[in-house]
Amino acid sequence: MTHADAPARSEMSFITNELDRCSDKRSDTAWLTGRLEAADAAIVLSNAQQLVLNTSGDAISMRHTLASALALGALREEMIFLGQQPDGSGPLFATAISKTDEEVEAIEGVTGIDLRTLALQRHLQDPDLSALSQARAMIHWHRTHKFCSRCGEPTKLAEAGYRRDCPSCEGQHFPRTDPCVIMLITDGDRALLGRPPRLAPGIFTTLAGFMEPGETIEQAVRRETMEEAGISVGNVAIVSNQPWPFPANLMLGCIGAATSSEIKMDENELEACRWCDRNEVRQMIAGTHPAGDMIPPSISIAFQLIAAWLDGEISPP
Image (cartoon, rainbow, N blue to C red; front, top):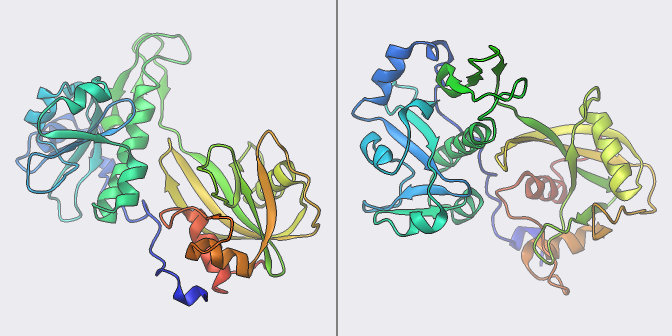
């Protein structure tokens, strides 16, 4: 079976956020109040684990009215302004509610679902999924930064949710995005794929890791590959990037050329790591691998890197 016979490659998720974030309006309290109370305003809700979707209409929706959001326990003072459509319509806000998964499922007209599952099901268009990635990252940050890291006192939402202020010590705290390198390392017609323990059985993927202070993207690729697989890397090219809201990462997709081939796997990071030739990767994508091995789904940048290399679209510099 050739790669051309495999299912068509679809776009990775979370990359088409169309919202105008109106950053110049975030300190205008009257404007924000007007947007929140607009007839076409919508609220994205989440509890600690899942998005809380609206099932009261003909189709599942991520949008709740302000009244229904408040009825479900949302707080006006914790509303995060995500943005509005480029034409000025449809202001979108997001916030967390304290209800458990069980409590959510007991309420008529709503249901809980995690964003990864929602993206895999593709019930929503990607602009909405992309807006949800923004919402999830912001809600997670607010939920985990209720107290000042300088003095420990409670903080308050400011700048439409893009800052939290401490009334006690006047400290200001800002949402974080954590950059991660994710890299396909190749050796001629072979690709280096590994299996972190967190993945479902049989899934092999590209190596990845968090960037550290004071290093370039290329340096992070070389360091992480050496740490996880014991493989040295020469030339590196930056290919693409993807917001990955689990919880708030920016994945920096790269391809690199190996300068060594003997794998010395770090068993604390990986439970398997091996070189895979193009035929084996084709089998993984097509679902015909003799051992049932697979690569991650097409919503991820890992899939896109692997498939682009297999199709000859990318190669190390």
